Length: 94
Image (cartoon, rainbow, N blue to C red; front, top):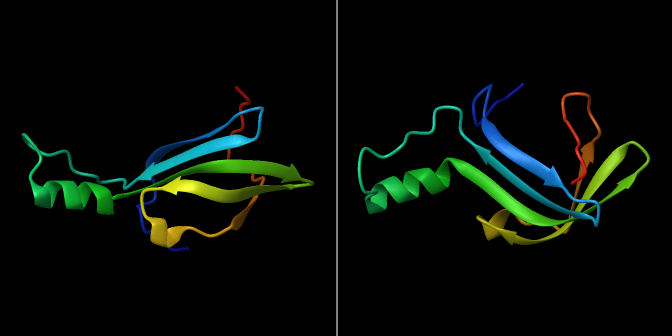
């Protein structure tokens, strides 16, 4: 299995009761700038993460992520992604 963000990336995925979600994942070895971030630092930080928000619904054993209206990288947007409800994911409705 390929791990483009490392075997232990950081991040959050939150689901609300009203059908909205947010997702943020950062590279395992993401480097914090030593001081005020330079343009190169900012570019590296952006390249070391993925984030998006939108709506979702659950159908059977799948979580369908819909029309992510906001994303850090608009080129990654798709109208619907399907995620299995795997044991490794924790779901907490807030």
